[in-house]
Length: 437
Image 1 (cartoon, rainbow, N blue to C red):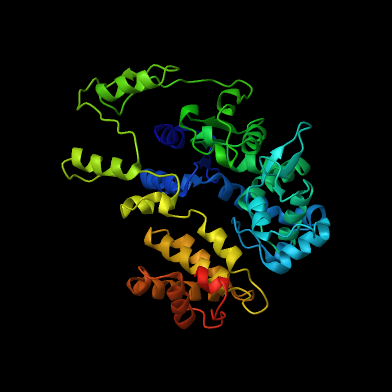
Image 2 (cartoon, helix red, strand yellow):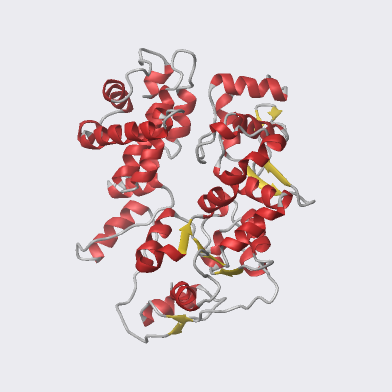
């Protein structure tokens, strides 16, 4: 943060219109930095990497992607991770890739959901899962994952991973885009760099070749996103001309007792006791999470206890003190499979998922994301403001009546949505979908 403020106040390279790009990994990180910057916010653009690249590369230059990738530019409305999975779509994909013999649609969707863009041995980007996917006695063809992407692009659907792919392709094929980016942002700072994947790293290297000063900060031991393609080894292999390395050896936050433990756990670095302040002896609890939580509360004399979880389903289980193994952390995917849209219920599951996500996002004060979720089902091609207004109005309904459905089944929630939000979704009369709900 001090580096940012120092650049803003002392640099002669910003002038009146140029900005500092500040990239962090999560939306929470974005909000934290914005709150700390306060008065200097107009000179800094704080964003996640996907939002930044979409705003400055993909969205303004999407027209260049039409001929090469068949992207439906008119239908694009942001980027998300919704996997297309309805029956007609999967059937078309099977026809295009000549894989009608594969019958288990749920496993196909799981395979789609696990794909990532990666550099092959020749430096080209290919899309595929981490390991070959086999369904029964048949293996999904490697090149058929790209066909899935093309079919999504034809419908104007861009996944988060596609933002990286398109950004890299646009910069490589149209070098002037890189020059525009470098002209806008003479400084490019990236936080939590250990969680950056190879495509992001390559883009950062290209940005830093000329004009733009790139600064990265991170710690390979704090990498938590390897499951999304992050490679912490790249933190130390990242290299630019005239690059200067700084190592922060002083621990300015922790007490001496905590630093002693950290130095015992981590032998690759030595943390100095900058403040040299003594505190209570730390307690490390190892074991089943619910028992650990209860013991932590007991040891804390009923003071507030906070827990940090990688996925929301575990976080919610901890809040309610329910054993996490009772929860299915892939319920959204299961809903899409069990309530597979057909001609009779074209977007029932889509509406239910949008309302569920919007409600929970709003309850976490992420209102912008909540409205965006509902905009998917109230979108008006001719009037975007109308869609937003409808989304906001129905979000108010969901929040104001949250107490009416929060403890009930998804079947009850479906009835609520059908009666108060979207009366045109189909009813659940019988069958596997109703049982699931």
